[in-house]
Length: 193
Image 1 (cartoon, rainbow, N blue to C red):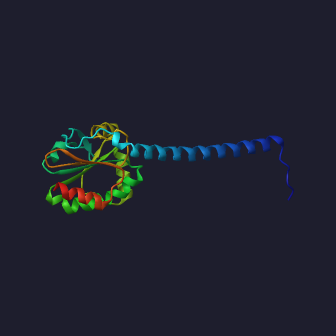
Image 2: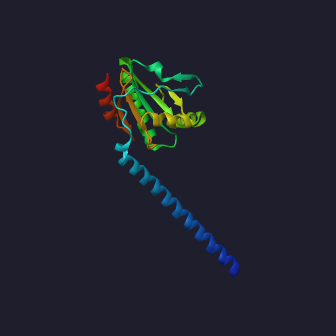
Image 3: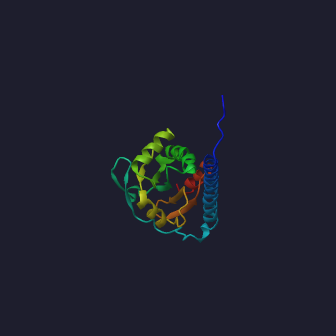
């Protein structure tokens, strides 16, 4: 087998291709690092977010995953846990099984988890199928409206997951930026029930 020497144009194209690939990899690493730092900075500065603790929860309505309109007021009188999440959010995925477990355990005592997805219906359905978890609390489709609702509930920084505890009187009792452990969530629930 005879080797054919590469011409200058072929060498130049190979070098350009390698440089483009290296620049692409460097840009992807920089972008991921930048996003992580931005999230960390937002989490660090969360005390600057307007506190709504002790204030009446804002009213809103969204469609559920089956397309039915739902108003948050239908769950008044119980303890509500509003969980803002998105299908691309890994911490959201990790905490959902805990929420299902807590809903099962404390639902009869007046607890109601409500998932508010910042995604479209198809993305939510695909996410829930992939999660392979029997959801026992309502999933509302927020899309862009969900972002505005999260802001109204104090999430000025767009951090996900974001969870809001509302007491039986409709007053905001706790704001949680980021992932929540089952133990921490259960302690907050017991305080409200």
